Image 1 (cartoon, rainbow over the protein chains, first blue to last red):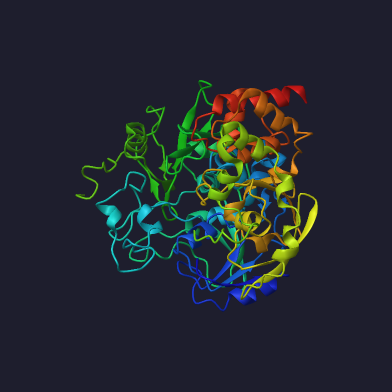
Image 2: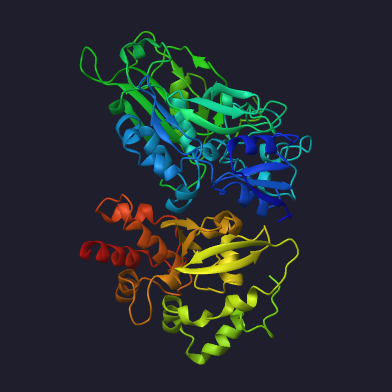
Length: 345
Length: 208
């Protein structure tokens, strides 16, 4: 591990001011905040991250989870994953968020890792983590060996010729499903970004993963309110799922990185009292930009319904599992690239 | 990892440890060593405090109820600090990347993997290691249950397993074995002693 200067931030303002001197807040940042450390210290041991300065923000009180006046929830960026997953309000109104968090990592890591850190998790692509290999995300312009190499856990949608890495966070899937807004505190003030805009598509700049700029701190997500599912079936997005309509679909246990996780919302009332309407499925991994809506005559369970929408927000894929392909095919009505043809398309 | 263990009795190497325990260094002895070695590290900090490392930063850790004034390189993980500076070697280094759980300790009462945390991040905090759980004469109930249920083979992961298991007692966890297995999934046992580990944990949960 390269050596670095270690300082402890006594206030958010001081932390932001110090970090704003960094050249970038993206891959290769020379100044990094450290909170849980479960991603950063891991990557520093591999020399994938080599900051010259670490700012410890663990003493900042940014870990509150509180109700907002409009009935939503405000989650501090420093709230630990385990505290968020077991918070009574999350269990009551956002069970899918709790399930998603508890389906990832281990109990020890969930005690350490923070909500903001979870949003900023780095890909598990083996080429990114190995400094002996080229990687456009780690060193722009060096190439992407994953495209023709070991890619069974990598993205099938939202890729580019430069990068097929996935975002490994389960929590992000649920946050996207709940249409969370990310509130970013920066040296120039506070700004809010929908989670769909917070992460960037790889394009030609896979080393840029988020909209964060040097000095930005406390990316606190606010999941949307959970009321008002009435017109959900009409494909008007921006509606909410009630708690009982939330479901995490996953065929894996925790501590298995890279397998797909899917959050599903369903409307449980209808003429026949069965599951009606549009399913919003979110597959883990690569983020799509805002408003990628697939207005196709498809659905998951109710083909008879005339107009349905599906929005895939995140996707990753274990190419071995035909089930994942099936889900994608049925959702989007487009054929999902298979390993044999993924790079011929 | 380079190790000059010949001259420094405070940093026992694996070789010295095995020599010291002699031919009896079989699984039983190793296990009891893991479970009850608090005595072997007495008076180490006083000497270590005198060691000067360039760029080292002074910190205070409260380890197993005892205040330790240390001077650590900023790169030192909590795990390396516990093992190399404080010389409490019951906490084990497995993968060193947060995946195996061998290095599990409690920080302020919560279990964490000490390999993914810097010692400097824990200045003034309360750390509990396997050495702080029980003594050879008065084992922690979980330590006793691991012995009774034979919840180990080689013993390398055992301290991490026990630290996780003790923390689990205070966490939301369903009554069934599957819930225990899920919450213990951050601790890997290469010998595959899982069935007995679950049995030991359930035994303690039922009796408490």
